[in-house]
Image (cartoon, rainbow, N blue to C red; front, side):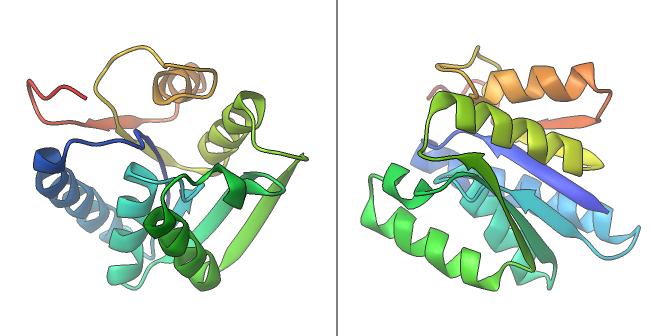
Length: 159
């Protein structure tokens, strides 16, 4: 089972335990069908929470990098460090042909995650994307491709 993820990079701290629990539940259900491969771009926030959950249960990671020099897009040193750790543990890595990070590269990467996945987990507040390639855009794309989407977000929580 290939499970893709899309989600917000900035998640309220009080929402993280609930999101982690729901990610674990979704992965537990998927494991019943066999080995899990998580498909992610390893962005800060939701992608990294997902990657940690996949690896914690012995799953594999397939990483879709939006561009060359993707590391330059990480503002926080701890997010970059986690990215590097997860990248080293990835079973496979696919780098898209964009020379630098951009909204177009993020949109293409999100679409490639959907195209590679059997289902998509969306850590999403239900609001429109704040830029091309945001979570709302990827959820819309998945739905247009008839890829099942599970939205994970605490009721009433605002970003």
